[in-house]
Image (cartoon, rainbow, N blue to C red; front, top):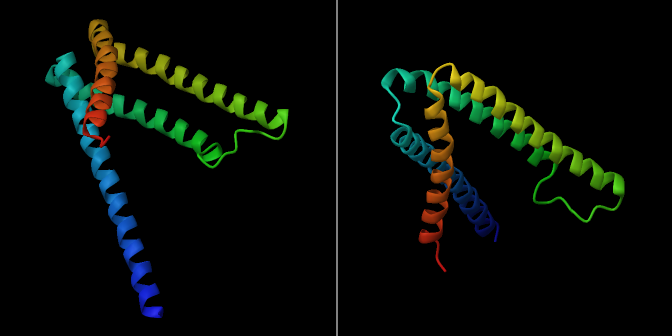
Length: 146
């Protein structure tokens, strides 16, 4: 019986590690697709791309970090039927704080982007980001079993 438990635990551990590796691999693949999609739509010059992508990645990292911080506080295990108004108010304030941070990053980085690429390309970038999200969702829906 102990051997079966040990085998089961080992199997679960290996499966979990495999899922984590696949998730990271999928994220990397999606990120590569995003870069390719946006680069094609915006049509960066080599010089623009070299200046733009590190700055864009910095912006994305800040957004991801802000959202991760929020999710650590309010995650899928959070009971949104708060027992007090004070708890509900704290949640709403945290949500507002997150949105404000995202907006501040957005404003700051649009200004930084203006220094390295033309404004018309920034407009194309914003449109390309939305189109990429739509394409990604469409592909996910198309590949999901129904």
